Image (cartoon, rainbow, N blue to C red; front, top):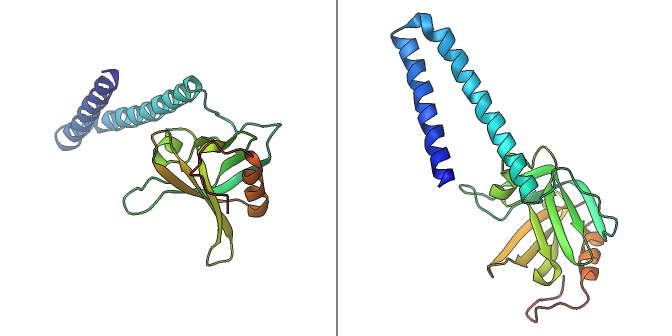
Length: 195
């Protein structure tokens, strides 16, 4: 209910500001500087409001704002690249040197580094994961045309769908070994060994 009201209020404000701009541009040119300042202030207010809402959402959801330090991590890297699982128009979204990855004894974590985790970008683009070890299906290494090694992680989401995403970690062999070591007793009998 609140979300629909907020969307309607923002749309109404956008219509009012646009109408005022056109009125000032076409009929009352003396009001155009004021209309331009109002439009810029509303745009800045929109950006700051969206930023605050995304920060509050991350704090309430207990998501990291800054990259965490995991003392018990089997593998950890920052400033890596990746490709999400959700399609945007015709291709999957990519993150270039703005992700962190951590392989823990019981789970696998991927997230975006501040400020790339703001404005709901990781949630919309599929760049943030907290995967228990029993949900990981496979990790495969592959080499790109330019010779860079990346890994594709396939896992089963909470709703049962199979999801995959790519990570361009700097040490793919160590990453695969850490994922292999992550869980000695897989709970899922259909889970294939990490390749």
